[in-house]
Image (tube, rainbow, N blue to C red; front, top):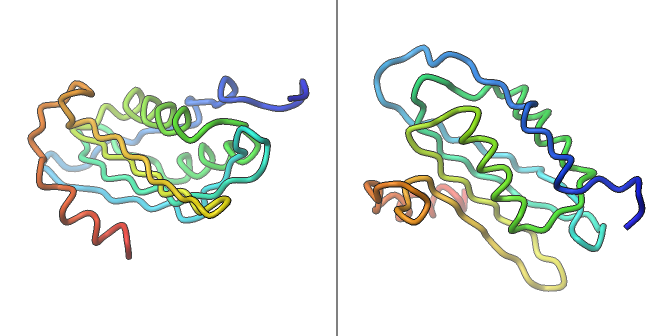
Length: 144
């Protein structure tokens, strides 16, 4: 890897910007990023679709800032596993949602594809496992 190559250490979470949530009632925001690109650990382009399910507290996601955050990743060399954790952590830090489910569905490379998921509701991630049936309805949304 040359010195000019940017790695996961260069991912700038400050590009994410929050807006005040205009509603006090509970609701769900679903965001799809269908043209997500980054450089895999072999410095070859990788492609994925990101699906976010977001239950806001006091802050919501400013979508233009999310686009800028995602665009910076096009020239970042990072593994799938590190990438989903960094993006998840940045979103939790900036937005402090009641719930965040992040799914990255990676395009096939060499005949193999993968899908990674993190959910803030999982007890193992500090959640309370209160949305246990969520995955059943979501799989349909993910295929759409």
